[in-house]
Length: 142
Length: 142
DNA sequence: GTAGTCCTTGACGCCGACGTCAAGGCAAGC
DNA sequence: GCTTGCCTTGACGTCGGCGTCAAGGACTAC
Image 1 (cartoon, helix red, strand yellow):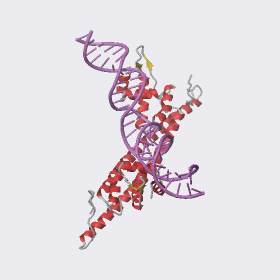
Image 2: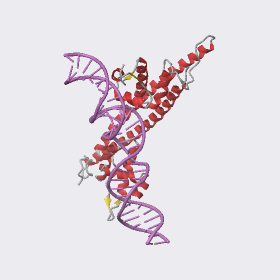
Image 3: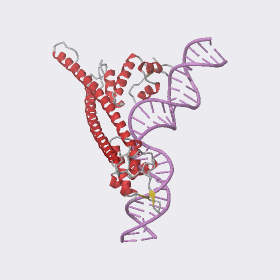
Image 4: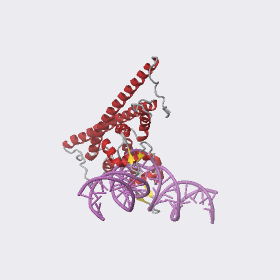
């Protein structure tokens, strides 16, 4: 199988495969004409990479899985190094999710506060002699 | 106040301020000598930008807040455009957090599965005549 | 006068994971 | 022979938010 077919079967591009090869992640054999040649096992490796990438692993993090498969294991996560990556990733995910939830809470609070302020202004505006109406944006404020 | 002082007071760098200016976000007046000149109001704008950046807003998303302050409002989120950004951000955060939790769950499951498989192999190994021991990685597999 | 500090603009570097174009080789169908 | 399509390498572009020089002007202190 040549590069175009492998790319199509894995739902990626030839550019990506050449990139992986340049990174030493997915080397290819070469035919007499210099064309890259792949087999089903390469497809397996590639799918492992893609799955992890979809999870947000960066390329280097997929390397232990690929090497594990290449070492003959049926699963890319059959080796301790892969499990370490899993665990490290779980830690990173937990930390990131925690940060994002904190940010979400703060932004939500800011929004609520700003809406209260706006409503307070709107209520004041209904009182005769009240202040200016709510900003409607647009740019020009006289 | 010149650029160095403003940067120091906001806990950022002169490079960053010039970058903001190049983006049209924080333009500066110029003194006779060509130096940029800022006042306390600029510091207020800058702090607004930095706060939102810390929340993960990208620069363009801070623009409505800055323009709102520049329009004379006491708060950067006193304008509807800013509230829209808040709401959009909340949606993005919720979506992202949801994705990350899903990924976290999947990775956790993969880890658990892989550990079960490893333990099963280890248990087998204790039985006389059982299969090969667990992969210890390292590279060479004969 | 001169050393030192701050300022100016301009321009390249960085990071990750490729996209995109260019120039040319190889194989197959007509 | 000619076109078409896939392949090759090489190299520059992308995105955001700056970092990091480099060369030179401005101002202060001594």
